[in-house]
Length: 276
Image 1 (cartoon, rainbow, N blue to C red):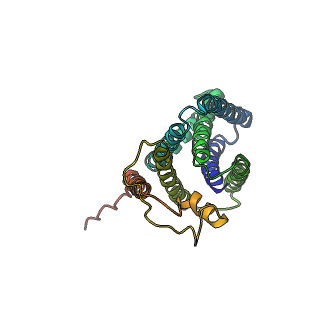
Image 2: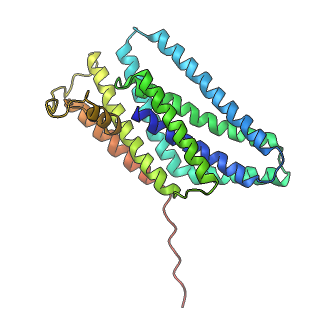
Image 3: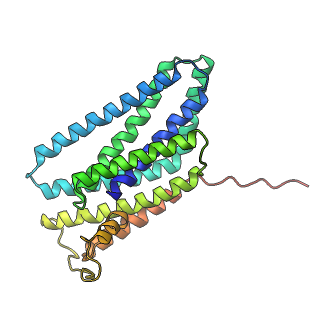
């Protein structure tokens, strides 16, 4: 539930900021709300179609190398989660500036309102598509039921939409840097946990045999199928009996995504020295 909630919350917040920027820039433009609504609906519909396609593919491959399929989903989700953090760190400001530019052109009459709907639809589709892929990764990790994922997704959607609305109307002020910093950290741990879980499936399929010895056993103190254990597994990738390969992959993914995200973030501009 927590994994689905965090992922959906983050994506909804990003989509909410996009919609908020467009609405703020085009304030006073007649019918701009209708076009933005159409764009949001089109993006959500596209994401739903992707979910149906992914579900059909999963059903078609069920029982045919299921461990390999699950491991592949987790590996792809790990790469996408890491790339998402890196891309947003590098291009988040540029994307916001481009959206403002489109909104200003529409407000000035330089572009038709259809451009507004297209921009919003593409943005929402991108975020929705990432949600679909990431939730398949959460499902493949084997620690969350469909019911808990739906509950977590609904909670993330409600929290994200509510917070986006409050921020848009100025009722709450949360620095975007702090908000995305926390969620970026959580997603980094989620991705590392998924990478480690993919090793379990590959070991079960007999494709990975190196470093298979258990590093520690804390099942008597904190089993990973307990309530607290499940929470720690989803949030930080905790496993009560990890193999050496699981631990190695977890650390490599965690450190790699962290360093890459940090390196991709634009450096603050240094003030020029004043001439005497």
